[in-house]
Amino acid sequence: MEGLKSLIEYGIIGLLGFLSVEAVAIAIERFRFYQGLQLGDFADRRLLELALTRRLHLIATIGSNAPYVGLLGTVLGIMLILHHGAGGTGLSS
Image (cartoon, rainbow, N blue to C red):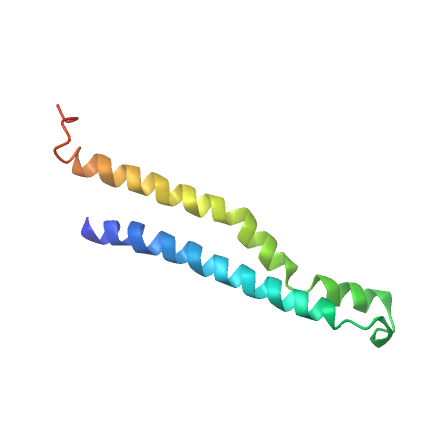
């Protein structure tokens, strides 16, 4: 059960931290790309659209799944507390 406790404490927070760093890194890369964008470099509108939307699906995936990872950590934490009991707080029967 100690492994589950470590997974909850460090694994979930670590995963959320990694996803946050990844999303910020992609956002910074996209911002720098948009600053240096020259419309004359693209002969076709389709190529321009592909260049503008590159890697934005990763930010959308991270943003839509991060709340579920946080909820998973909450549920696992509650399950762990219930498994170990109230821990002498006077709540146990």
